[in-house]
Length: 444
Image 1 (tube, rainbow, N blue to C red):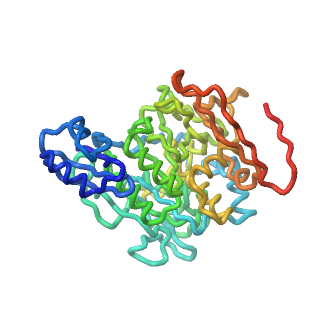
Image 2: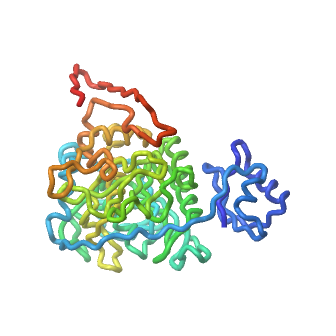
Image 3: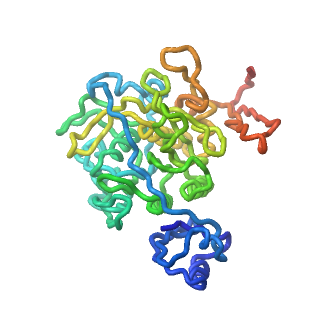
């Protein structure tokens, strides 16, 4: 199967007519409007290079698979205070208590294994059980779709339906970090201890691209990304695994197009830190990529190193992702402690919601990324005073409070040295003071 991108200015009908004129026998798996292409199962003997030569076709890729990201079981007990103490490192606790920011009015789409929307941590105030919009109007999970069905494993035929219920647990854990509220749950199962997500009043979109186990394909993920955009998500979280670290692939191309339309994306940088450069990394784009910080404030050993495949600086930011207590499928106990960049990425997504609410404006994702990077806290290696590499921590640990309160902006937010052929000998750096008072800056 292949994903094809139509040439600029070429419409769907013209591209299909061109394929048929060249005697390509195929079945359409998915069509994409923003990406401007399609996923095809080719029945004739045409290979990718032959398809790429057909007039009206710009790019061709084989459909590739993404695994449900591997997460690390925690050695911490669910009752350990450390598994819920991370908001103080990022200023989120102050934003909740002093500034009353909760992400209300912001929509976050979660492309993952679905969400157990019946979980009480996703219930509206006064209710003991959460719900999905199609099953009740007063629900926090108001949008979503199941693109695949329970039995989908990446190689069989998807059986989509309208119910994005999670039967794996990964997506529910991610959703709890973004917007769960387990501070005052009075029904069973009760949490091991009270906790709250980054943005406990966001509206959630659950876009299920995995079955209960196994893998998903990037043609399905593209469809989920486009639906999330079309349903008005302000932010997309993609805690996925098994993709390329190069920008010239379908999910990265679509991600850049969505960011250009104002959407923000958060994606994990992979959990392959002990093996050097990431093997299992979501495609890089203008959306923030993240790595994991332990609750002590140091980079996790399993977080991947950058750079990306084209020597651009990644990851962008660090966020808490080591030993995180969050929601889980009710059938599997309702709560668990996990570690991984799958847990750091939703923290960044939730931070976007707080920032958007605070500014009363839905800023472009690349603009918010710049503010987060400008105000991040540089982290040290565990048990050391030595600062962790930028290839490991990016700009540093996200400080959402500082990002919202700052009156200074610096651009660009990073400098890519690239290779000798593309090396830039000089870069212009701009510092702007958006405050009411004169500021003095010290450069070092």
